[in-house]
Image (cartoon, rainbow, N blue to C red; front, side, top):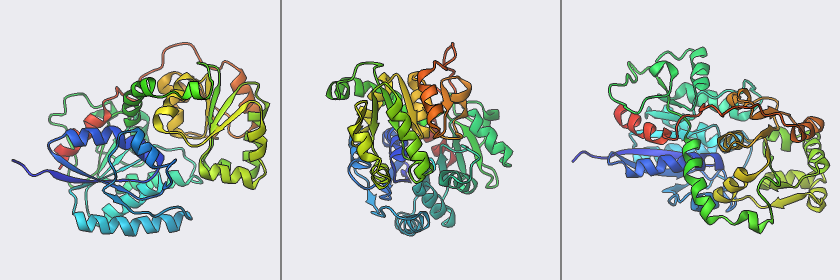
Length: 386
């Protein structure tokens, strides 16, 4: 019997946990891998961490590094030191990182410096705004990775523009048959369009959410009778003018706005004297951060979604819910091209107009994000690569 190959999976924040779920199931079911989950502790309290592990039916992490919050450099440096030690202890055959968080960057750098094969899940995304810390994390991670698992053709095109040449299947979605795929040669990284693991996660979890979540009843909400909002990016939360403008838009709307609050968002609202205004508003429902199942159900039945989260922006598209993105730009441009999404930035007038107008075009949503089998492809390709 062949020895299983060890894969260290570095995660640390809510978006990482969601992407981990479908891949964990495939890795665990495979006879070829022994996955080791390392939680950096980037999101460390119950609402932002353990609630997602429980809701997504993920195992307790094999390592919890407990790094916690802090300035970007300090946080990333602590993660890098701790992850390097884990990798030295485990001597893995492969390291997998997800998305664009500081945990992603630290895991990528640790693997690259130790010459351990590195796979980046959700590679090739670009907002073309280097003021975003996520953009720096994406770019660096991509350029030290051995396997770049892209979620869309647009992501593949971004990498091609940056000089990546070993592109499988001309950037088209990898077919179900994985035989004889040309992978890396002479240590040249390989680029593949496998589809989006978040689509895998959404399709699997929303069925469970329908059965188990009572969030609509608990908040006394009707289907398509509310707006769902999330605000967490530093460009909005740490900029007083932007945050005030977004809050003003929420207060001007005549509809119910459900707003789950991240801990740091609440802290910024309190700092700028905005929290009590939202809390006392007749049309705003503030909640604690919600588990995956409850949040997915709220997404599915919202009339519109207002968010600065790339992941939530995509999930809105998956469920056919029009989205108002509270950013100047987005890495998920296909949601804009499909007409299901509009960029409103933090401009209160634009946000209110986008909520009130029917900006969505007629027509079906195009399958830009694959077919819900991304995790299956990733595991098979990684095994063949090794």
